[in-house]
Length: 133
Figure 1 (tube, rainbow, N blue to C red):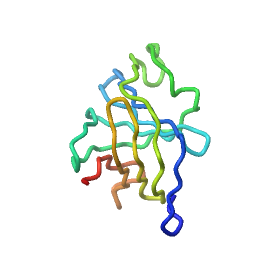
Figure 2 (cartoon, rainbow, N blue to C red):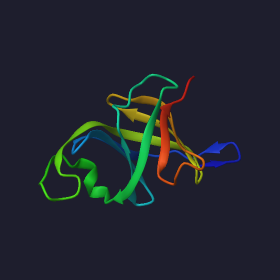
Figure 3 (spheres, rainbow, N blue to C red):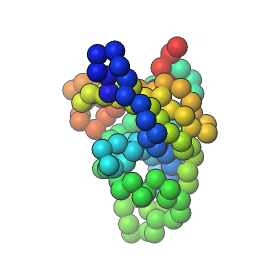
């Protein structure tokens, strides 16, 4: 969070899980406020600076879920195969109700990224993108 010109950083974890449910998508999760804040991203997030990806906010998950890989059985919410696509830590640079800016230190993704809520498009629709440097 930005306080004046200071930036709060730490060893916060993130994970991106490839989720083969009814539709293939990527679950992006940030360890924040004692839970995993979570967004479903319909297309594989990449490293192209400025390319925007739709991110649908979903319910928070328990922090223990950060290491989950396996099969969610048919008949359960999110049924299908889940595997870890990327994992690492992040530094929180700025956070408000409608925007989260952070630096990712992942195995695949690295750099400054943003989550920005769509105005007037519904409370769950966000954009996820790598900032241009």
